[in-house]
Amino acid sequence: MQTLIALFKTSGVFYLTPGMLIMWVIALVLIYLAIAKDYEPLLLLPIGFGILLVNLPLTGLMTPGEGLIWRFYHYGIQWEVIPPLIFLGLGALTDFGPLLANPRLIFLGAGAQGGVYLTFFVAYAMGFDLKEAATIGIIGGADGPTTIFLATKLAPHMLGSCAVAAYSYMALVPIIQPPIMKLLTTPSERVIHMQKGRKVKPLEKIVFPIMGAIVIILLVPASAPLVAMFMLGNLFREAKVVERLTHASQNELLNIITIFLGLPVGATMNAENFLQPKVIFIFFLGLLAFMFSTATGIMLAKLMNLFSRNKINPLLGAAGVSAVPMAARVVHKVAAEADKKNYLLMYAMGPNVAGVIGTVVAAGIFLTLLG
Amino acid sequence: MEQAITIFVSGLGGVFAAMALLYGAIRLTSLITDKIGGRKEK
Image (cartoon, rainbow over all chains, first blue to last red; front, side, top):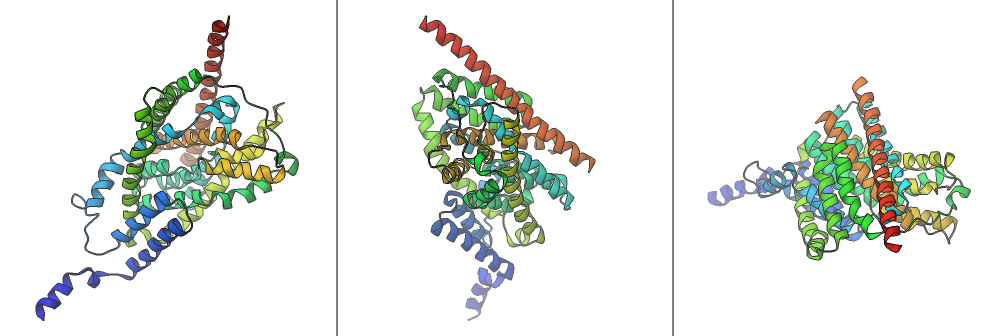
């Protein structure tokens, strides 16, 4: 009998805390949203499971130097391996054609970063320190790997909450963006048809990732890990001579890396770390960042129209947040509601991919100034 | 607060500067490839 009691005392049941049980509920909600609602399932499913695992007592999965998931976290995320590899895959999946056809739309990708910096400012005014405020602000860029990359460097204690906020709001782009888009544009602006872009030559598509890497890395060297891999992946794609590498970057590598990204990110969210009043503010500010980014993108498009003969449909500004291709689809849908014949999807892909670059540059600047 | 304002201004300015340079790079590339394409057509 005593042996049985001793055995029972070594089981985790004895060490469960109310906080852990609350985290189980959060984990199960994320798993439910991923499976039943299809909310960013590739990330929210492993993140949810990671949260569940780290809130089971005595597992030692996140014990520094020993735990299995800690090793994924340490060698994958802290060593900056996984986010750049994700960017390699994203680069291989990205078509810069729509951006090269309408190069002026690149500025909308910069305009949407206004939300990142506005939120940074609000977060700082609310009492977060500069590094924490920068990490919260970057959520507005709607780019999960960049958020993780920056959080790991500036505020590792906020990694889990910021990543979950970023991926959750990315899934909610079709709900968050349309009211702001309709509020900030008039019906006559929403029906503006875009002028057809120029024809892009294959050579331009090959030159762009090379030129892009040189320009951005020269200007913001701290963004090099992400930009370099993003442009390399794109060069694989456009060169059309390394189909195997392109395919591997787009599929096997990206899929494997995604597993090793989600699980440790979720596993950083133990009850002591996560169940704090600050986390509520992080989620609130993350939402604010998304809304600000949408608004600043639209406002910049309207500003550009003041100086341009060929008017831009200001809805395209909302695609300047990086959530690719969700934000572009939302722009197309809202424009089509105003005019069924207005096909904005391909035009919206321009600012959408520019937004990815813009967010990486913004993260690089934060790192340069605060890292 | 002063540091936050500096980061806000220089950060946003830096993003626009990067995009402006990229825009210039795209336009330059298209000009050069157009020239090459034109020469080949002749």
